[in-house]
Image (tube, rainbow, N blue to C red; front, side, top):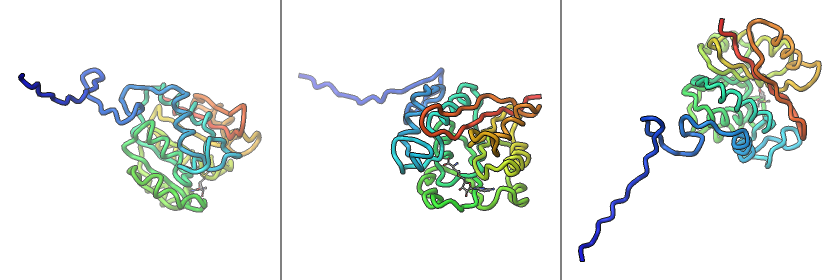
Length: 233
Ligand SMILES: C[S@@+](CC[C@H](N)C(=O)[O-])C[C@H]1O[C@@H](n2cnc3c(N)ncnc32)[C@H](O)[C@@H]1O
């Protein structure tokens, strides 16, 4: 009897005429994850501190974001269809936020500024070890640091010193490096009357940015996160 030769065939996946590599579902171009999928990935990645940020366990990427708030913000950016090729984050600590942003948006350029004063900074090397980043160590208000950060960015995430003056200074110095239609994220917006809360009120009334959304968890811990879009004009 003639033996049949079995040829192993790898299944190819195409979106349009483009072949994609299914590393995992979020990496398949064109697929926008649901808010539940985004939140689950964040929960599975680990929290810096359960009483402050919530989450399912302490450790992993030591993320300092409330999962439901961060997931809503990520979903809004993904739904906009804007490609996030370049990302700037001020206030990085262990690198949890940068890890999550990289996972969902795959920016080709990631610039991180941090003064390395946070005790969890020691985990950053490992957490961001597989991700290509430009890391600047120092205070974001130092002029040489401001000058060294070259525009443009599609997304700027402020999570450093959350005082009013400091946040306003970071907006003036770094949100100015956003492309028109680029996104600005502010963290720690929930504390009424203070720092970033006040900044959100003012920015919402101004002409330079439009408020896309603000998310403050209604159950469990809340920090508040606000998403603005730089006006197109
Ligand atoms: C809240 S943590 C950042 C958390 C991080 N984004 C995350 O979600 O995991 C704030 C970080 O910003 C740093 N920091 C505070 N003010 C800063 C400034 N003006 N310039 C640079 N880094 C700053 C702190 O040392 C700390 O590492």
